[in-house]
Length: 474
Image (tube, rainbow, N blue to C red; front, side, top):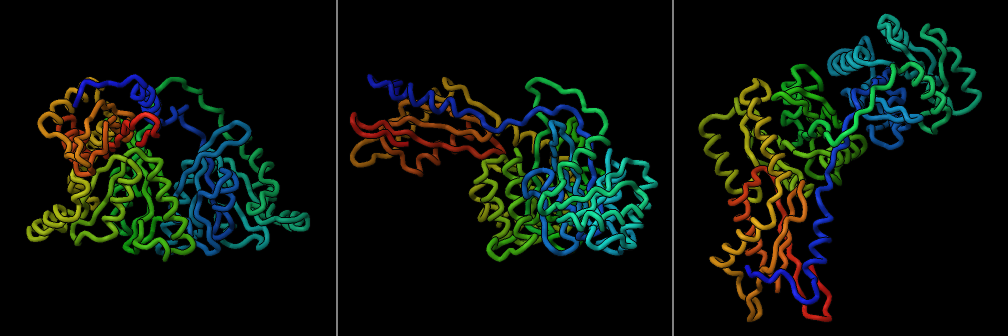
């Protein structure tokens, strides 16, 4: 490390400003109070998720031309004529269902109980079915405002047939085509009329609940963990892999603060083999990870670490999110398995020695209370900024003790260093020559030893000073 902070060209000063402006880019918009809730309900395959996508203006909810694609309550934020609201997509509601379909119906019924307005979707091309009448009876008894959407009305002829839905006894049917957008604006106008008064707007720099993504391969226990944290069956849990398809958000009070946990679909080994709903579910899992601040990677401790586990960890590293590795199903781990698990961790997780580790059992609740302190520590590391003076003093001593290796007969110098951004932390080394990758990894390891960053990835890059007349390289 030298005291050369620049030369006559002032290249360090100019480029330093460029990097400093790069700052932390992951900001969470402040909440403006609780939003009113609109629950979208109806029997299977009437077009609820298609209508949800139409309302929010993007293909977010998983849609496929088979019943039972949506299984949990999935929330989105809608906005119409400047009015914001929470939109809850639900699974197909069949009052006579059994097994998995019954549990999906129970989730829809919970959504009705929590909603301010209910958007009841009926397939106008089929007419009133026994299931529609049964759901309508439940909605009438709920006492909530109900807007009846007569879906799949693509032309004026179908509008006349939609009038038959008056027989449901819950008010005027509003013809709409979720697929083509026909009359969707008129439908939303009616929905807005039933919403309560808008919440008061809050101003300030306060950020909303920290976002935690629960990721892992199918059937590793993500939904069980979310239910344990929430204290209720918020999402469906079933031995069948792939039960969760849409990312499910849940606000949970833990450790004296509110967290937004996101349960995601299990990430499978080969994306090119996915089809239909599973393909889009995988895309939404990646999007949920990008919107999160910390990822809790669940691994089945009772089984051998798999290629899927390692690929998911790599995905989190590439996203730049902080990470906690939760070894779930610890109640099934005996002494022999613990011995071999430690060997697997030492051999296969060599890329993430910085990731925080928690051994839990989502089923029994064992050590689940240790999860939040680990998440808080990872987030604190993710947001840590090292003062420039302290960083350069540390690197001066480090380079003096262990100089960079000679390259091409010359020994490169580190002229200056700065932390360009946080979330994730990124460091830039201004150098007089190329630093070998092994030496950069050495610097990264020593930065971690000196300043912490447990649970957070860090990036160390370099910007090389070139001779006059030559372009500068990063």
